Length: 344
Image (cartoon, rainbow, N blue to C red; front, side):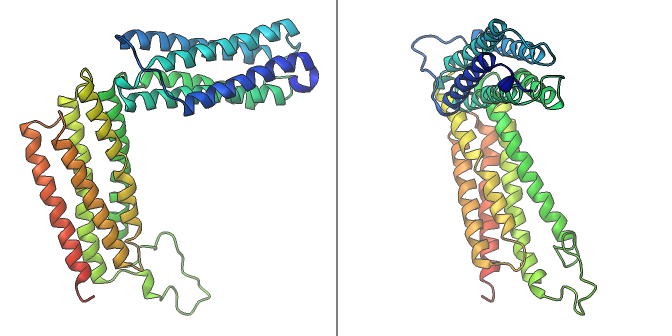
């Protein structure tokens, strides 16, 4: 017997809360934050937001416990529980909207995503309560309650200003690019066959995997070497920028905040571009596709380095590695193009 089927008036209050929270979640996910008309106190914002998150966690716990075992709450108590969870969610979303774009779009996006995750957790909890039996605390109800707690706990690890938010983006991108480089090196370490670990010989076939389209030629390997140089330059760009942001990044001035957002935006484009290049290197190698993706990644890295050069995080010492990496990008691009055009 579920709350939905057991007591219609009780389920109505839960269902109404669920519908309202779904609407709030969608508005937070798709909507814009408020623009600050006056001075914005970032420290006060975080204090208030953390209190709001704590309240949601507490109300979710109360709601889950109330429906974990018989008897069901009275209609009046059920309405109070529904109103309390809805009020806590409204407060959380309202506080999120306080955060203006002027504090950084990168920061606001990460706070928004964390807020949406909490709201989705509450939605799931309500859906579980409305659908599952009430005679005992089910595993699914425990899991959904834990999901709300976990989403709320993540707020303690959120970046507190835009400089920190950019560092989160750079760390994520660096990890993905590093994985792509290691995957390609692993494939190259196989004597001839990059599919050795994913395709098995068929013992019934007289000519196991004899198709040369599944192997790299010597020219292929030379092309891959130059592409590796370009992907390693991408990793170096991210690594060097991370150090520069830690040393020189500033979130106190509006122009600098906007520059940090620009760096975050273009940083997010790097790992997909590296992945596109890595994927087209597998045999049979399509040289035109490789050349196209090499050119795209090189152009992106040049744009990336130019944005770094023009930003406040680039001092005299940073300019040295910016210039060096610009040269490395050009060198590997030209090397790849020459190898691709050779004998074509």
